[in-house]
Image (cartoon, rainbow, N blue to C red):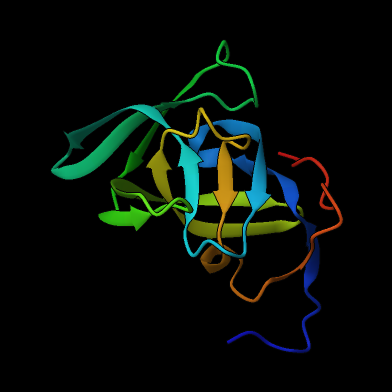
Length: 149
């Protein structure tokens, strides 16, 4: 439950986000109140063990419409879940938990990893990550500006 006296920030339907633990300075994210979970573009997804813990290595193309820029990321695996996408297709995805910077907010959020090459946005922020912190203005874009690191 959130404190109703705390003013909520306003987000547009798309916003700039940073994922510092994954070395992603800027990525455009679609704000999707219709999606419960958040998703991050990933390809070459390879699980491995590190010190007895399950980790995943994946690569990401952080820029829209560009496959020439790639970042290799590593994160502990939080879970593996069956996710139904907007088209009704079910896919078992790795789930990681990471911090994201959205405007002045630092949020810890779960992200499912999936190939979003065919999608316009490399990242989708679902309502669980936004959990009572924001109000969405669907007629606006990039209200929070680019992340400052």
